[in-house]
Amino acid sequence: MKQLVIISGKGGTGKTIISAAIATLAQNKVMADCDVDAANLYLLLQPEIQETRPFTGGEKAIIDVAKCTRCRECVNACRFDAIAENEDEEIFIDPISCEGCGVCSYVCPADAIKMEKAVSGEWYISKTKYGPFVHARLGIGEENSGKLVAEVRKKAKEITEQSNLDFVIIDGPPGIGCPVISSLSGTDLALVVSEPTLTGIHDMERVVQMASHFKTQTACCINKFDINLENSAKIERWCEENSIPLLGKIPFDEEITESMVQGIPLTEYTNNSASKEMENMWRKLYKLFTGEEMRK
Amino acid sequence: MILSIASGKGGTGKTTIAVNLAQSLDGHTSVQFLDCDVEEPNAHLFLKPHVFQSKPVFLPIPEIVEEKCNYCGKCADVCAYNAIAVLKDTVLVFPELCHGCGGCSLLCPEQAIKEKGQRIGVIEFGVTDKIQFIHGKLDIGQAMSPPIIRAVKNHMNLSQMIIIDAPPGTSCPVIESVKGSDVSLLVTEPTPFGLNDLRLAVDTLRELKIPFGVIINRSDIGDQQVQDFCQKENIPVLMTIPMDRNIAVAYSKGLTIVETQPVYKKKFLELFKEVKKLKK
Image (cartoon, rainbow over all chains, first blue to last red; front, side):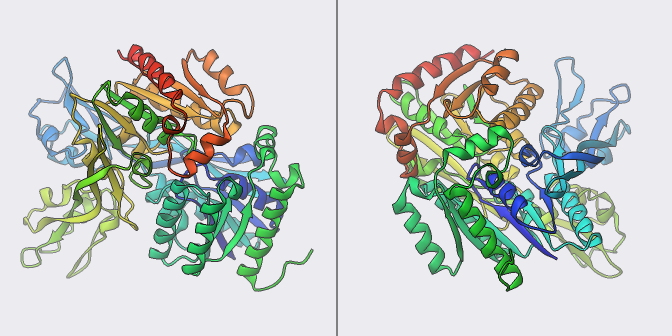
């Protein structure tokens, strides 16, 4: 089994469009959407949900105002500015700022604070015409997106192993922090989707460094490469200097938006040059993974 | 006034709106610009501030004083993040899991835990002609961005107009960035992905009780659904920017809209007027 994660650093470069294209091209795989706080892949894969599971990420502090003596020990101990006094001079815990460390419940001399498990999202096992799909939804403003990513990946891996499949394809989140690290750890290859803008280049460099920090092999592609050919040439040079395979250059394409509006992966919507380039990219990825040419 | 620019979906134009608004206001209002997208900060590529100071950000992580420790295991019990494990005669600390809550050192019965600062990133201070600039940068390989966002926001100067460029998404780094704002602007695009993530961002801001308006970028692509949604939910659409290859090309070179098409300055000033009306 090989695991591929699609990341970008910068948001909106085309991770999900490319993931959906790969979903139509790769055989024997499980798809996983690990952008759990703004999941979009389901809009293109049109899943039929088979199973929904609650996600309990962590705990939240709950205060019993009747027991509280307003000694303010908790206010002083909380490092997340989650506890304060309200207008009625009651001690109040802001569930959104609370990181669930529990220190307040330990220091409270009146035993007025309890830690309670909070349901902070859901994850789903679904059927799609492209095969099994594991995805999730994190509750609004919740912590623990990295933990939810880990749950999604665990399930995707389990299905892959049980059904004797070949690939897990992971649509990753933007950034380089906790949920990205969780999406990337233990994968065989990270495909970095860049775009020829100064911000795209800046963010690509950071996310590639992050992947190599965790010793994950990377490959790159450039989306909308014809928006700025000079910057695209810079990315090509940078990839060459850093021995990162550049797997594809996708042209700017208005049909990408049209296919999204229709809820269809680009490779099924049209056979234009962007769509063909994505097919080429998958062929190259397949070879990187298996060492063999893909059979028709 | 504190104004944050957020979006749910990445790549919709948060930074574009934030930097253009800042450049349109300079000369009228004193602006402090905070880039809170500390995982991938980009605003400096457009504002090009002269950076004059940088400060590392440390997270307090536990350090065990071996002579005092009797391996009772209390620290591991109280740690909600599994960042400490106590074995028979040794204590293991996993800094990448630590949130720096201080529980272990506070509650150790032997006072055998000190805290030491582990560097997780840096904040940098800069200026342009007219704009005070601060951004945070998470170190490569570090997971925890909220402490860096907090460090940036600790330097807010409330006598200035504060513009916060937030990260994408709806989870903790976004909350940390927009919390305490007087008004937020949500930048979206009229596509199914834009709409899906706009809904999540709207739920987030409603939960935080922050007044907000929407900006639709590349407003002539995609479909009508974002417009319909805003109308149905009574959300003011404060600005629309059509798809414009010139804007996209200028962006790719690190140039702002108001630098390349000065007529937009007026539109951003009008946007600012609308923003002020939203403030409670």
